[in-house]
Image 1 (cartoon, rainbow, N blue to C red):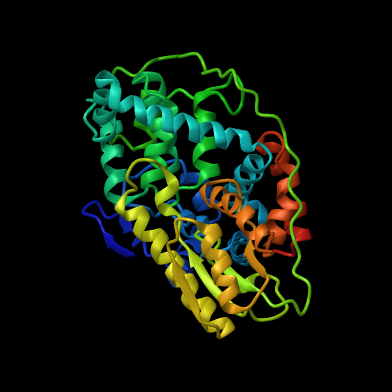
Image 2 (tube, rainbow, N blue to C red):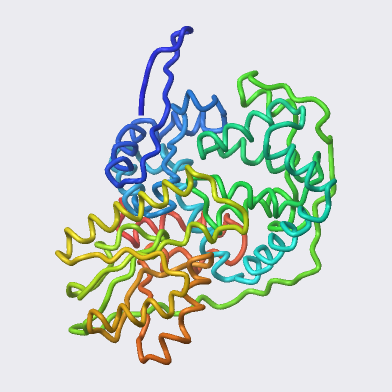
Length: 417
């Protein structure tokens, strides 16, 4: 992270995206003094990649749980009152909302994955769709802001949240490209690429998440909140929200597991949770292994920056967990998780494998595929849910505002203030 004075006297700040907990804690300390009124008044402005003084940029570390939401909330309230930091705290809880909502609507994820596969195949058979798609992802549409953001995403692995909304709206309603391909483009390149936050944000812009209510990017809004950096022309002035025929009924949240005392176990670390040493287990594991899944985000190539950040996050998690439990880590990139986990459990002499709760997404898909082999071998897989998720997810059945109203009570319940 570097800071310098710009020619006009304003502070410039770029962020060094390093996938370690140390880097996460450093960034948190830099941002905390600004998490109050300064954030609330300026957070919607996209000042460009050279000036990130008005936003936290913590999402890549939180996404991989190198930094826990509880830590961010607790540290924020140590520096600011709830009223001062309410806007920032709401942004932290948005992640819990998206994760909990998708957990209760897994059909949305399954449909999205199926659609991406189908549309990627169409890119091979439809030259017209492929040309329009390639122009969009390479920043060759002629829409100045959109093209700049496409390049910025590929080169930095990050976009301001407001820019993500504008980009998605232009992709869907001005360029008339399938939203699923846009979500896939983000998911392949974002350092904070998250199956819930990314998929549902694109659906929200399209008008599919909040049925009948879409988001239209306005030139005046873009010009205002980019401080005049962009003034796009020829954006569609209005458009009907997208509709879908599929129904995605509400499903009950699955019950979390508990590890009985004195049961020998092996600990599995994935990119979904890189803070395994804080899981509530009463004894040390007999062995630790890490399993990588970044490449399964998409049938297309994953961006190098996103891949490296996830790899570094997993490596950093393994180093810290090994030191904490004084237990050797086995790194694996297995294609068949069932076969690997059965053999690994046998090698370390356990019948129980523990991991943090794996939410809906590619990692869950791999876990579910492994279950038959584990069951056949008599190996029990336990998923331990964190108290933060356990407290938040029941309030994510509808829109965010149901959870928003519960934030003060959740802070008290989790003793975060």
